[in-house]
Image (tube, rainbow, N blue to C red; front, side, top):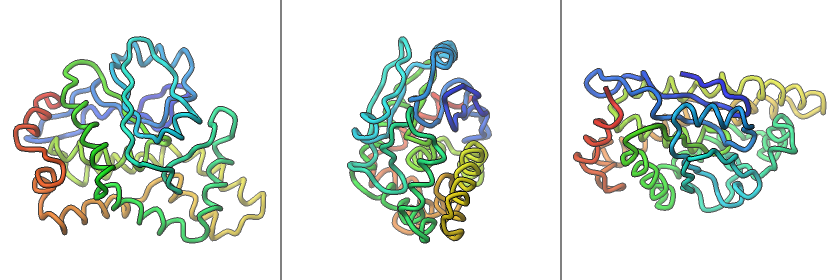
Length: 265
């Protein structure tokens, strides 16, 4: 369910998605989004009244320093970086309060050149294989498992890549099908459509090469092929998702059962 909160992009409550045994994810418990930098008082009040208890920030220290989250009363903020350093295509260190998002996106895409789509696809396997990234996701999953009441909101900058992979891990643990995981993942394109179109228009106004402009939807948004890289890596290297959890993240069957008990009804 999309959340319409002024100043908060790409936000949705994952309640209602079907998980293990046909049970549904509880509403008001899991929120994925972009950063909280532009959130005003009304938005903060909305999330406070929504029952938000914790915010998990996947960004690097550089990103956080450039665009810190708005502070919501009574909410615990947990830093949980997925990447050690800034990574072209995923991280964004721009001061989002003082720069137009269309311009930020265009500058990013131009810096990546004509191979932007392939570049993005190649960034996903490290998110599911790198020790630092997996340690960050394990910390995130621990926060989720231990939060028995109220909502957890987790985010990166735009809420699509680091959040997309983290959401996939969480939903697979909850027994959600890969088809439904992909459907949720692709909703980001609807959320980012306005900014994507504005960036493409700006690029054409500035005379940017059309081949570069055509990469904007794949860089400011997402593509199913990116997520399939994650699924394929798990299948090829570990055979099953359960094997991956056990061998790479030290997550056992009891852990999974507790997570499902916490979030499914």
